Length: 299
Image 1 (spheres, helix red, strand yellow):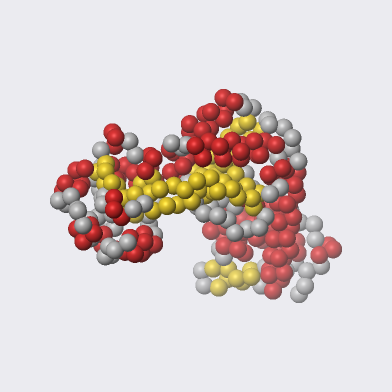
Image 2 (cartoon, one colour):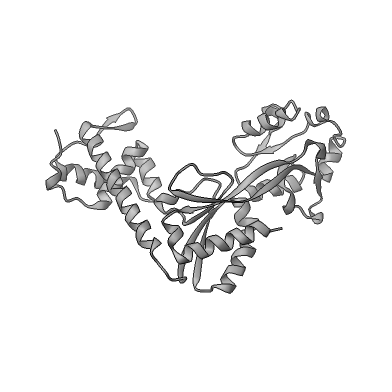
């Protein structure tokens, strides 16, 4: 049964609940994503089905699967959402005032150790600009306005994003003096194969990267993991193992040292990213250029 689109005049909240459920495959996952409750989303989806007089989902096991009418509606609602996002970006992109809010997305490392001093300086210069910092190691979706500006460790591939390379960050292996003494201060690559490392939850890439430098590490070398960089750095300083740390963040009082400096650095690029339409916004442009200058010279 096809939907008569000329007769459709539904609540956007119902449509949003439907699309989230369709994309995530369950009401519980959709409720979590929308910061709502499962009963609320269920009522909204049921109301939409009743209004359209079609079934949008079929239950398959513990999940939900779209019916043909549901597939048709999902494409329509997705197009509506993209259009609304585009309209919002275009409208905000025409703002000429420096007064207002700017949302900056950055890794936990950047948000904790570099941005506070930079944002404090920005606020002194432009007190009418308010800043929200989204500290997350996951990438924010700039097109959906999850952030106005993102600081990332990779160059984006989307053509409608503007990206500027800021610098190369240099990571080295560091460990606490006490930990290195406990494993007889490794002097060769083979000595380091017996060390414990601190990694992110998915550390296979790190194993591959280190083994390409001549080590022979396995998953047993990574008994401690965390996705939080502040916790990561504290674990290194407290002697839980060897970790990757940016050279310019290390202070003499941290009681850590480079491990086998002959391994060299592990460079990671730093990029500043914004949406091309937001780039014409005076406020966003000002903050973008300010961050570019401050991050380029940060030490």
